[in-house]
Image 1 (cartoon, one colour):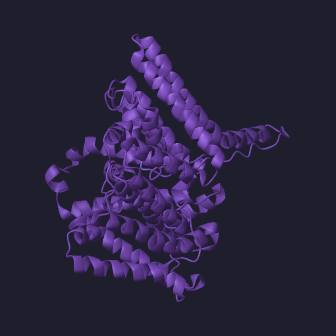
Image 2 (spheres, rainbow, N blue to C red):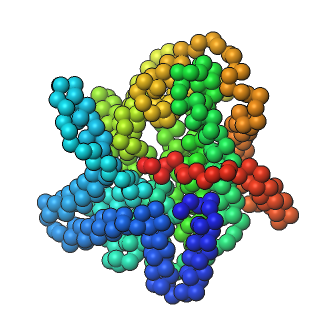
Image 3 (cartoon, rainbow, N blue to C red):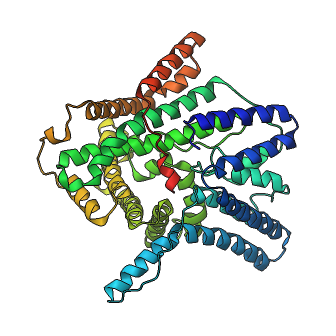
Length: 479
């Protein structure tokens, strides 16, 4: 069930009405739990059992961790929780990947096994809710969080439908306390414009540029470097607007039913360094990896080489979290390399005259931003292009410019490519503008009722005219 469909509008209207009718706090949570179950079962009813199994194990394990006095027993129950969660994730998400690579290895050795492929279906959202639940038991183990004594509350936390299938990743410390007191249905201007912002990002921008990127990256060897660059920029815009559009709508929907979800994006395409990019892009994942993987590995406390190792391991695992493919491992490795190089640069830049005063100058910031965004563009290619041969071709044409500026074969005089370029240009202008002066939705929340109403009419007309003929799922549903 997609946020931008009639089915969701009907589902959400019924959910809000039932929450309002329920009145009593416990009954409202029961409605929310049942609604979340219906929302998730819309894709595949059987997989609700997977979530309930995971939630039951973690609820029990956290309780046993809290009641245990010895460190050994506490670690034992924590291990049960982590192994159960990662085991389910590994089986459903990585069994096919492991099998295909094992078959490849056998074939290299001349052996031709004849077993049948696993062909395991990936449960939607499993990567997100697995990280939600792991953070809960780990925080209980670290004594940063008291265990939840209500199975109903914990089940609502795990299954809360706005963030269930594509984030943001929500920690129990940020959500469980919100279940302690009754929540109010809130239809306000902030929720409205946040939802509209996400809808425009998804329907007009992301879906509007996806056709160009899909066409070019289907056979990158057929196109010149300039076309590969245009396709990379289209996907650069598409994936940001698709994913951040989802989280904007998720945060707005949660706000309507009275709950607050964490921010997940902060204009990442103005980042001037790798650490800044990861403070702005998929914030809840990068902070999760930092707190539950990078710091436990030792962080930057055990010397330079160990720090480099920890950065690379964290980003490799972050890449693999996105999907069971060597493409994503390479994507993670490239971002890990950028973090390592940046940390090395910080150690030597003072010796060549790059002082803090120099870093504050506009030309330095612009140069650093351009370099960082070039790297991000490059890394999106292995993320997007499937198949090793096609990926290598696309990377080669992206990095080694062939000097061919002939664009007639892509039909840039036609309506669709021309519209694509307009959408990309418009997005980049708005993204830069909002980074400097604040987003348009933020201004409209403070505008007069007449101005706000006029903006709604304009957005509504744009959505009506540019709404794509077919529903496109969100990219991060596959993760």
